[in-house]
Length: 181
Figure (cartoon, rainbow, N blue to C red):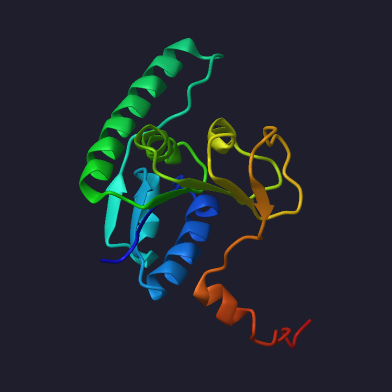
């Protein structure tokens, strides 16, 4: 049986493209990959080599907007229920969170189920969800050699941002400048 990895990412390209790059590499190494994201992220899943795509509800909880915070808390609670149900059935060996609110349910359940977790931060400033889980994650991996807002005691290493295969291939092509400049 192959190792199972659950990738959890917010629904924008900044979170999804690094998740896709890691999924491509791990799939080639024989890992069984699943992806958890929100409705926005589903538009990216056709390019991500995952055996399962799980949609979770998620939202921010801002104390500045108490009424919206209640709605956000309800969505996160539903997302955690969905993540818990999936993770009980699928039993991932590790969870990798790429930030964004849709990664919160998977990371929360990983913590409660004692599943190892890794966070990937694509930016030089740790995002909100990654900040919540950074001190509890087994590793925090970043795309830069500095990381602002990293809690003391977090296991951090700068490895860079993973690149999708199509981007790696495109990087080897010679740039042809337009002739009519």
